[in-house]
Length: 336
Ligand code: 5GP
Ligand code: MN
Image (cartoon, rainbow, N blue to C red; front, side, top):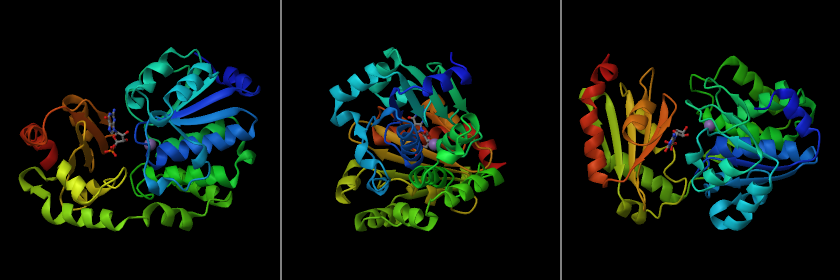
């Protein structure tokens, strides 16, 4: 393990650093990674962000985006960087299975590993962690890492502020989830003062839908939404052929599940999608209902209490059936 003084000592010398984040990075994964990237680069480190997979178009405007290496596109180069790194920052995930094949490379690397994360149940692969499940986002934790742990607020540039603001905004549901404390608003305000253009960021992230995405959303809501009133649960299921029909790309399915949760009295919303290699589930819940428990117990996944995900090797119909048959077990929690 490293203590903070030892980590600061390491960071006082130029290091080879890899920053990585979870499979199919979202706004927080990429925003926290690029925010930290700009900070560490400014401190004269040799820094590379390596993502396990590609990520949606609506995130590709972020400063530093062109410098990101995608593991699946440059496996050998990524593996060499991970092997040679002195430090590896793991942002917005806490289990090496979340970075696919890269997980084993990170595990065996002799680099010191720093986890900055807000998910439950961290795996012990790190040497130092800044981890708190009550944090709105990994980007908030990166802000705290720079400002509170390293005492270096003066080094936050407009690019850093822009990336961190994006992470906080997206993971807090535009400042509406319960993790959005007054402190989160104060951090957001600081980031605006430091150069994040909040109105522009909102537009870049949220007003970037393709025509197909909007038509797909309409199709999901009018044709694929099923409401199970007895369990205050809403379900949207999408097959491979639906995805092909609307020419759906990475990121186009993001957020669809939230519409199901926005229905009055719905406590649990599920989006079940037939990906080429597996069935992927996204669950959202309101209040104290533990969506992550269902994902962890039945679908090889996890996440937060109100936003969780998992997968299955079964067919789409089997997974839909499995999901429906486990609802009675949770009926009390869903209807109380
Ligand atoms: P999403 O539904 O947007 O894919 O994911 C929602 C939340 O659940 C995210 O915070 C994500 O980190 C977590 N999550 C999604 N899929 C998985 C998974 O397969 N395993 C684990 N442990 N967490 C997941
Ligand atoms: Mn996050």
